[in-house]
Image (cartoon, rainbow, N blue to C red; front, side, top):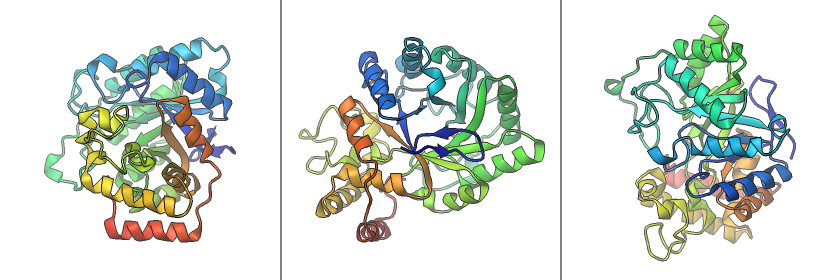
Length: 353
């Protein structure tokens, strides 16, 4: 795979990124080691994690994913220098008091979270440090509308940038990024960075897949014009776009019970568990089969080949899944398939937003 540049930085990464949020919950340490070894063997040099992982989030596994990655790196001398390592500081805790004591995201929160991540990862520097979700109120994680009366922001974007700039100066992080952001947020982070000589965000990590293309509703233009790269997460829609739920819905007995959306009721209650999202996924999966493709091939090729996407984050629970996802690289979708995809979206929009 050729490497791609993130934003206006010197970070060059593989166009496929290994997402790790299953490590420490669905995936034990031994299997996680095998997955990471195989990813590197096949040319993936970009790993993404977060302080709150594993997912589904709970107190017992908070930080477990970073700890597993740290042990893997420690057991493989020289490996750290071959990888671009990304992690995230959680935004306001959203019902997860075990992440931090306060409910917001203060400058001190960012500093403490970064130090803890560095310790768990057993590294001196994080290449890309991202704000997992905005400190301010935004429509995200299945929320459609912005409501000014729900605003609870206490820490300005400027202050967040100042603290991140301090971490860059101290050599603890190299570059900064955002996640689950809006056009306003990306613009404001870039504007303030340029105005005050602070670090410029190089990327935003947002959902992007066939059942959630909301990134294309304005944020793609903002990022393109500002030189901010997209890291596309959930390209398979939490498994909906693999075809494994085409016969039985995740909550039905016939569904594969080892799948995340089938195994965890909390996931079924999220945007990916909506009946409309499953109905849409089944239409896309059927389209793939009509054109001689697997559902996975079409869904991933859609992300792998879109101009909007710098790197696609794939999350797996086995080496076999990893290989299937990587084997989809190079798949080209015909103009006919792309037109049919756009027609389906025109009819059903983005049911998993």
